[in-house]
Amino acid sequence: MHVVMFCHSLVSDWNHGNAHFLRGVCSELLARGHTLAVYEPQDAWSVSNLVAEHGQAPLRDVARAYPQLASRRYELATLDLHVALEGADLVLVHEWNDHALVRRIGQHRRDNPHYRLLFHDTHHRSVTEPQAMAAYDLRHYDGVLAFGRVIRDLYQRHGWARQAWTWHEAADTRVFTPLAHEPREGDLVWIGNWGDDERTAELHEFLLEPVRALGLRARVHGVRYPEHARAALQEAGISYAGWLPNYEAPRVFARHAVTVHVPRRPYVRALPGIPTIRMFEALACGIPLVSAPWNDCEGLFEPGADFLVATDGAHMREHLRALLANPDLAAQLAAHGRRTILARHSCAHRVDELMAIFAEMGAPHRAAQQQTEKAHRP
Image 1 (tube, one colour):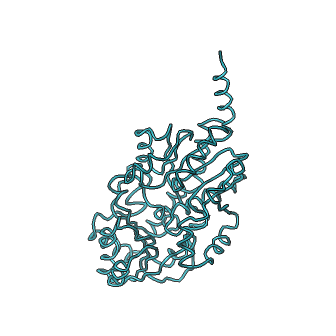
Image 2 (cartoon, one colour):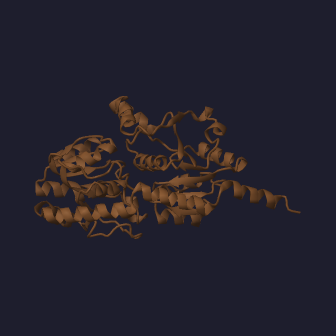
Image 3 (cartoon, helix red, strand yellow):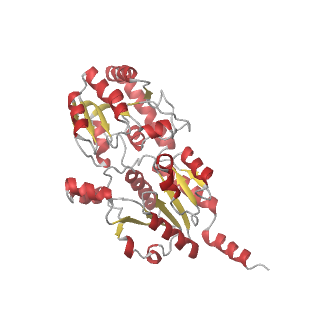
């Protein structure tokens, strides 16, 4: 099968977690013998910010880390969809794409019904910016892949798409795996972006204050940390280490004893059932994890067995103290979490789900033929 993807970026994961998941999905598709073409805009903000901070070296590094992957960078005004979509069987269009591109691809699908076309939503904008999402023209799309049931239901309730499926993110277990014999560098590491104050209070309660109170050796990786955030980290005794290529996370996890999960406020309050992709990746790496509260209403994990849940800052301190003092407890928790990822939440599982959705929709040429025959009936 020939798969075509239009994403914000495959080559840059600077403040762009969807790149983690797509790299894993693309790798799995290629490993199964499918052919693949990935398109990303020439002026993608993730690439622009990465290059502005670190130069061209990270782009060369990701090519070495993922030699099987490549993307084609385009200018919207000159993009030839007839060339890009020739021979396609399945086309995925991520929601961080220009509205005009989304519309043009839908129009191409209307006039060239030889492939299936799906919109891929991995953000909270369906709740926080519904007008922006309603503005996407999905009339000619076959449906939506939503990374949580609540988002899937929103598309169906608002009539934004003809049908929608839940397609959670997952860990690329080719990359995210435990690494043995790494030297211990600290007690706790957190990998995540500060962002738009969507979890500032939560980071203070569940990360900064517990680290300060326990006197832990801690490190934070991520981007978009304003000056006040860096000052708060320093005051808590936390080392700020900046951007980390996501494929380097297993090495960093292996050098620390524990990590935490602090979801953004929109997901906790309005979009239950959706963890950050960092949670899948951390559990895949076999590091014990303590999470701030979130509602696992879809039963992705087994809280208390895959990870511990802290109801407040004091509870977080108790859990971290217990895990650091009891290596057997930490090892048991880490092993259970990794087993769950390997059993249900790898990118291989998500490709299985994608293939099942494709089969459910039926072969494009057959559906198109039936539509044509119906149109010509007397």
